Amino acid sequence: MKRTRITFKKHLVPLILDGLKTMTIRKWSECGLERGDVVSLVSNGREFAKAKVTRVRKVRVSQLRDEDAEKAGYPDADTLKAALRRYYRRLREEDSLYKVEFKLIDVKRGSERHGR
Image (cartoon, rainbow, N blue to C red; front, side, top):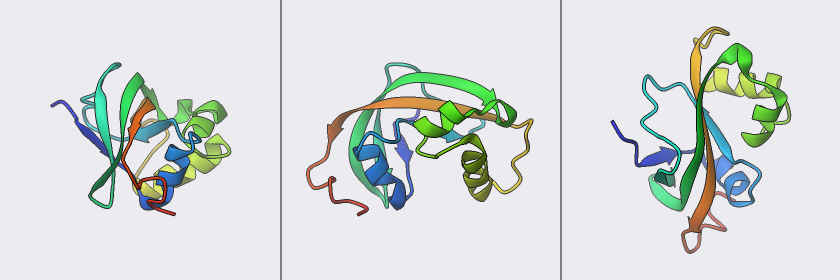
């Protein structure tokens, strides 16, 4: 199933709009995204931007590194893993995740204040 949108918590919107978060990490059974796809970025049911997917990789939790954390808006891999465990309560080191890197291509009018 092809994905057309990615949802984010409100507190992450400013990080995305400021270019500090350029990757999301998800525990999806199927990714449904590939390089070149254009997706809507959504928070609280509202689209705040469009982005082009630049890279998709499947990894295990144990393979996440500080570089991944920085792209995802976290200071280091341990902090990233702790955040992921808040979203996915039963997350184990051997579980598979999708790393989806993206580049903003359009910011919706008024979104620069959305989430702030």
